[in-house]
Length: 284
Length: 284
Figure 1: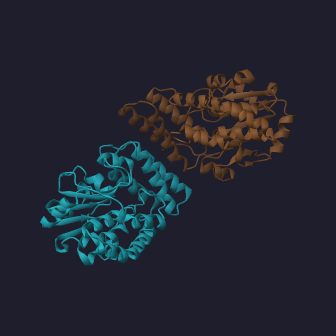
Figure 2: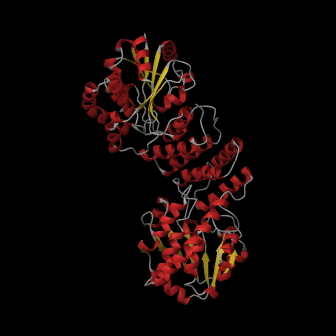
Figure 3: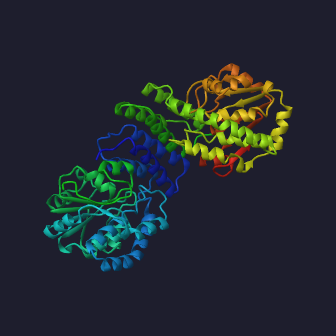
């Protein structure tokens, strides 16, 4: 998916939001913002929003000297999700359609997104996750189930810290020996890295690989060859969140996108309403 | 008042908002936004936000070829305010303290601000104005009344289209023969120009002068010498709205600022809460 003009105000807000999270003196704040504005004035709109965010956050890291501004938020969200996990596992176990329930929980976890919701509170996360099983699921669950049954190899592209803890419920509905879980190659916004996957216990469930790139999405051109090889040979890809959609929506692989639509530009691109819980399979 | 880093996202949003009001092809929209971003990356934060807005809207006019994107909105707001006028005049006539009521109506008119509230609807304007006389007035009304009584010359700096219609009620509480009403030198956002003052019937009440500059505020360095002379010899200045506050807050003249605080940066600069109806006299 390309970047739209409407993404620009969001990039500026995101920059301001990162700078609020960390202690920076006024001079560095100003220098960082100027660098981002200058970059934005020259961007190529043909690239995806995460490709832009990749460069913006690189600039922020370089100017501020801070490699992981969302560290505290990520830890808070991981703890919170781990506290919520037992009850949600119970609810999914008791559901008539376990796969459907697990998908809804995985999508509810996608509400934990500091790139879209700046200054996200514990209450906001709790509300979203509590409503998880109540919302309608847009998408063809039977097709998803059939694809799982058929697949010899599944690549699950994780998204945010906290969110990945709830992904464990859906992972447990998949053939674990055939499934690999992928994380980002380094800290970007509140996206999960290997450290969070390990903390969440995902490394105990399935093989975890990092994609070798620091983008809030999956930009194959920038990823490690090992990851790209895995991507290319997977029979089925489960891609969590908007960033993975934005970077892979034009890819012809057998991808199921699981996300909550949190941005009007993406909702319009997909053709659904804002706030939808979406199991989207473009090639279907 | 200087520009703060927090003003930058607003400038970007304002640019997007102007471009939504007018029909522009994608190429011009992109070119305009790039030009604004490039300018923002180099601005001098010592200047006031309206000084920045002056340059930004100049860029927008140059790139888009559209000199008055808010024309339709201004006409709608003028008509709406003229419809509201008789009832508000009645309410002020019946009020125990007519000056206080007139000040509150003038401040309520300041809600009509497309620079802050993008895509402002008729309902939003009606709600603000209807609540006008109910809200508390922050400021020293006695001092304001005493200054009016003493003044040999009063300069009333208008702000937005629509709003200036409601200013007539306060103008009628002033010595009309000693009062001059000033408007902007040309169309900028939804600020009132001479044409709107004439349409509102203000030219029939008092002398109206345009300040010769196209800024959403009063930047004396850019104004016509005739206006500056009038400003310098006025015993009392009544300055409506945030833009006039931002550009004149450091001026030592006898200025009473009448505004609704619509922006957290300005509320913090003044030291009051957001949404306050404010009669502010810094030299007091």
